[in-house]
Length: 187
Image (cartoon, rainbow, N blue to C red; front, side):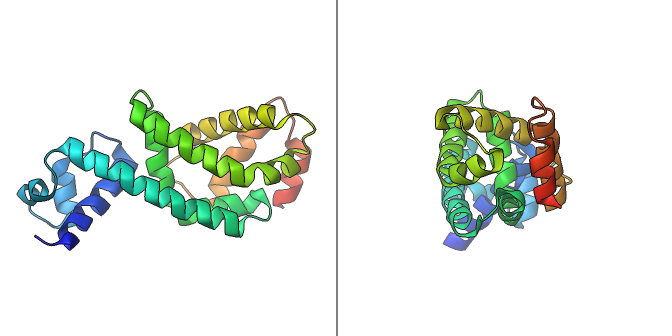
């Protein structure tokens, strides 16, 4: 078996994890990768070993995502969501990490990725919210909004417009602080 086969297994498993979470089907992977299921064990000792490779793969995807954030965010709305759309599968994988946060390694990667994104986004968030409060308070508030957003997004309707719409709904329902300023920016 070649390295290409291992990559096919990882890519298929990444896609399946993004849609189904950590309990993805090995049969679905075999079908998606167009490889015999038995060949999986040539590259990975177990499904757990594959899962560990997926977490490493996701961390590499996070690095690419963060690089694009740093390069492309001028206004958080809509620029953030345009970058997220380009990394749609990674966003869905990240969502699964949150949904399965009872597993410490999932929660750790989810939080670390979000904290790194926050470092890039904080100046834009401060501008968007016209914040005069402490960075710590704003970060904590925005992290709560982010967690809520990941839970509320529909994996089957992940367009830029829908992602923004979900974000706006959450922000408008959070003490009504954002209804005027942000909606005007998105028009």
